[in-house]
Image (cartoon, rainbow, N blue to C red; front, side, top):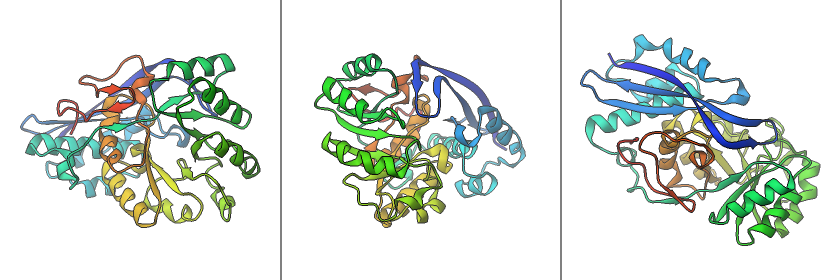
Length: 327
């Protein structure tokens, strides 16, 4: 039998991180280790989906209930059968990918049938704040070519304009985190396009996607909260042009790869995102990042500390994880 350990960590943010629904000062996560009888270990980290009620404590309880089912031949298919999509399944699935890589010496990218992984450029996210804070953060982010701006129902176009003034060359994505109405979206789209915004992420609340049907938008829209796993894709086609894949939402790298395949087949563009967290959480998502037009894996850049053997970031460019970290 394999042995599984879990521990809860709280990663402190460099400064409070505000989005439309909350202000984050610490990101709580569950870190999981799978160990076989030979002493090989596979590691993972999951934050879970907080807006769906998941916590590190609830994920730990889910994993604890499965201890007697974690046999040496455990497959990714079995993981998907014994756990629903969410943070606990993400942790177990990604730890299993890492464990198999450590057991066989075959890196994850090769086991997944992908080309050798290459560096990618991540967006750097600016949380909400007052004008002075927004302008300061934009100036401090001038080394990053791609910015993701958190906005809400009151602070939106003005945020874009302030950032554009402070960092004129930035490529910009905006993320409303479900805070807009379709009328506000229609009102803002022409000005956002004129300001050079490239993508609008999750403008409407999850469940209101049908209101986007027939919308003539000058900008592509990306589904985040509305996109969970492959089962969610049918309601997104014709309403969004991109999906944001997050391993905590879909339940791990195995489903993430399948979700990317199916979304691409349906003509949807690909983005990979994160729920904050350390390099250990970013590393499995880096596999998906190889296929994505937009990459948002900046969690470690927003936190005071990182995991051991951290991924290397330079001006938004991320290098592949070292095997000592994951994969």
